[in-house]
Length: 135
Image (cartoon, rainbow, N blue to C red; front, side, top):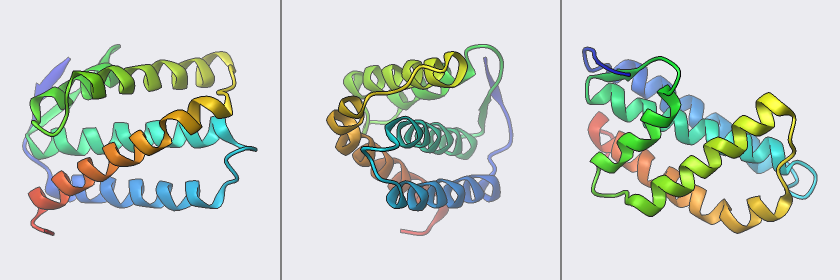
């Protein structure tokens, strides 16, 4: 469920910093050895950056489908389209199966989508930085 809150630039900025730290961690890991951990970190980065965008809009999610709503909300930005959201929801499902059922994510999944994940993250970071007045 999406709730109205006061826009929170400070929290959005902190989330952005944490996401950038996660990106640094990803760059230190060998993809062929840790595809599950890397993919889970991409998901966390994307989810948190989407959360930061919501906070800047004065919105917050809660409840059972909160993460799906965070991702689906990206359609409110012209920079993202249906295909992006479908692929991100697929990532969400993969991450959930990994985290909650112990299912490993194959290296091929990561290799096929890593460029897409990086592009989405760059778009999100640009939007956040623009809203924070950093661009």
